[in-house]
Amino acid sequence: MKLRLARQTDAASLARVEQTRPQAAGWGESGFAGELGQPCARIWCACEENEIIGFVALRAAAGFCEILNVAVLPAYAGKGVGYRLLAHSLEELKKQGACRVTLEVAQDNKPACALYKKAGFVPLGLRKDFYGAGRNALILGTDV
Ligand SMILES: CC(C)(COP(=O)(O)OP(=O)(O)OC[C@H]1O[C@@H](n2cnc3c(N)ncnc32)[C@H](O)[C@@H]1OP(=O)(O)O)[C@@H](O)C(=O)NCCC(=O)NCCS
Image 1 (cartoon, helix red, strand yellow):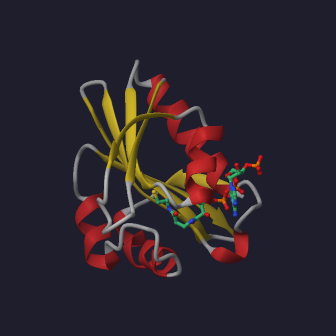
Image 2 (cartoon, protein in one colour; image 1 turned 90 degrees about the vertical axis):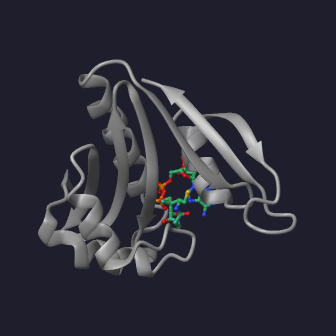
């Protein structure tokens, strides 16, 4: 598995991965294309035989970073792809200087919550009923 930064030409492939995961942000191809054009945006992708199998999309500026969208193809789930992507993204942020990293996740999204906990994220806050009645959003963060 190789990790690399996504390029503008990857928008359709990223959207295909995202489409397999209803819990992802739902940007679609045009959303990824727009994001890849933003100077503070980075999308790290994991590739197997030159095909994108997972990604972590973030925006970083002035010592703050927000993780905005994460997904791994179901066929590759549970094989360490998400963790490697996240750990690599945090390492790269650290190389650029100290950074506070935050994200939002549905409290009932157990795989994602466990992944972020393993990567060192801790709860910073809770948005009650954010995704509808009884579905809370957790705000998580870590310092790198
Ligand atoms: C969340 C997601 C990216 C995890 O990717 P992954 O490659 O399957 O995760 P990994 O194999 O790297 O697992 C890393 C850790 O995550 C947790 N985890 C992963 N899958 C899990 C599952 N099905 N149940 C519980 N914990 C899980 C575990 O803590 C695991 O560490 P361990 O293997 O030491 O137990 C993937 O499930 C996914 O794409 N989900 C849908 C999209 C999504 O939820 N995005 C996040 C929105 S905020």
